Each structure stands twice: as structure tokens, then as C-alpha cells.
Image (cartoon, rainbow, N blue to C red; front, side, top):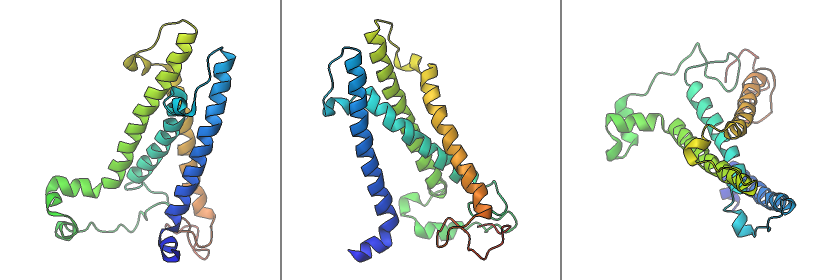
Length: 215
């Protein structure tokens, strides 16, 4: 057990923190949503009903969407854009040569040993993050529309269809308020890691490294 934690501690701790926070988000969101429904004269939802509600779906995937977009953009842009001195950037003056196709093929199963397979393998991390972003955006779109239409129904006003809701300011307000915060967080990490350190962290340069040193 100790060996498992030693080699997987980072993912285990973050996975546990994620689950704990998600449970508390669900419980507090459930109570908050029911209070809002009661104020509008609507019967409270059960927990299972809440898990299918627009309120829960929107609030969950709205946040996941922005996180995956942040990571996708950071992985993709850091491949060819640089920040001198940042531990989050490649060194613009010392680029690692690309591995040969022969060397790459040795690592891949036979069905990936072709130009398309090598391309997908070479960009698999950013592709995965962009795919997760797209999935979460669609689910956010659906959940937000569902929550919006409930409000419209209670006010006896016209409902929005799936495609029509794509032009609704509410959907984009929910997205951009999260996207901007994620890009700000990356900006701070990139810039602050030039001057600041955290001893022992893989995201930090050594305490003895000059501020001008990259990575």
C-alpha cells in the first residue's frame, strides 16, 4: 500500500480532493436549487432528480469545460511559444530534436505504425484535452439550456431549442467568466514561476537557478 501511494500519490490525492469537492458541490447545489424552487412555488427535487437537473449538469460541466480548455491551450501553445525564464516553458535557445520515425514506431502497436497513427500519438495529449473540452461544453450547453427552459416555463414564456440556445448570452456569459479565470491562472503560473520557487516541486525551478533559466 505504501509503495502504491509513493508512486501514485499525486493522482490519488488530487482524485480524492476532486471527489470530496464534487460531493459537497452536489449537496450544497441540491439544497440551493431546492430553496430557489420553493421560492417559486415548485416542489423540491429528490437527490436523484437533482442529478438529472439542468442546474447540476450546467454547474458541473461549466467548470470542467474551462479546465480542459485551459490545459488543451497550454499544452498546444507551449509547444511553439516561449516565456524566457519560466519553469512552464521550453527553452527558446535550446530545442530538443524530434525523435526519428523509426524510434517512435518501436513504441507503438502495429495498428498505429502509419503516418496517421504517428500524428495522433504525437499530439495525443492536446487532442485528448480538446476532446474533453468539447464534450464538457456540449453538456454545459445542454444543462444550461435545460435550466433556462425551466425558468422560462415557470414564467410562461417561450422555451429555447438546443441550437437557438447557442446564441443565448447566458450560455456565453457562463463560459467566458470561467475561461478568463483559467487563462489568468496560467498567465500567473507562467510569469510567477520566473521569479518565485517552491522547494521540491516539479513545477518550480531549483532555488539556486537564475531567474533567466527556463524550465
